[in-house]
Length: 409
Image (cartoon, rainbow, N blue to C red; front, top):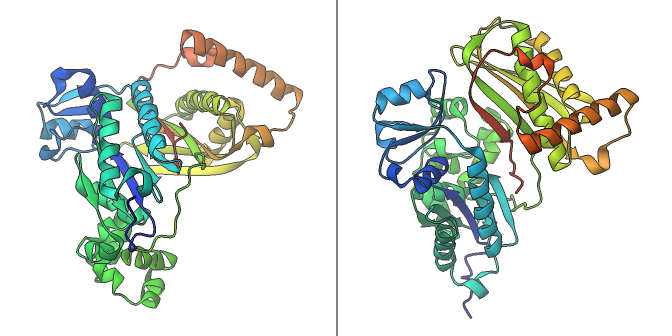
């Protein structure tokens, strides 16, 4: 029987699929293999959702405007996203993860943490288990590859999987973690966005080792609680456990428009459609939203957002839309806008939170559930509200998200 080395108190995997959307398209269409592939809309307003590894040497990556990506890599093949296909592949991948560990914490469709502590007695050393996991995913999906980072805490495992890509396996033993992190740039600190990185650099902190060796009190004075958080991570301390039961904290639908819009009426039309889509997904998962957020992106890519709580949790499009439309009064930018998004926040279990509504709520629920049934059988556009019929603005890709702490599978 194999024994876990004393230096390993836990074994944490971070498994992250490689260029997931693009890899799925290359798997389904062998003619795309070996070619630079961009997932997204070819329209002038589209963005890159995923770039294959063949496209990345041209400095093309996710969230880049498609027009910029095609200038850098004009020979790229642009493929519209197929989220149903990606979701189906994700379910199969998560089934494989669950076969290896009962404690799986999905972060998105294509990545998850696995707690492998204790499994070494059955499955072998951390390296053996990780290689077996990679092989199992490859076989179950018919050829998709996953990179795996292995360490004793979530933070180090995630950095390891990122640095090991593509098709990587990088193991960082606990005793080596602090020294391994030390030369990495502060951009690798979990939670350090561009602005925070700039502040860290301005304060003289170039590497994670600089943070690890800094005085915690000084970091707290300069950066507040985040400074102490960074100090702990830099010293390979991360108390967060694998949470396999957490549900998504929000659910959103953003639409990039092919034509800029300015008028409130046009914005409300898009909010209405997003509210209907989100409400349908909430009801399908038995969830209620306690708040909403509206996102608007200007033509120069400035992202604006406002949010508010609902008077009571709801899964009705009418309630989500009313709250979202009300938030438009709190935006002070005149537009025009290239993206309109609505997000349902603070999701709760509908079975325990729902209260019996008034008569008008009952009627609204009957209408919306009837629309659910029609959409499920005949498609989303089979039956539309009269207010939506004259909507003339066309869309780029619709980005439906679960703000995962975890994606539910």
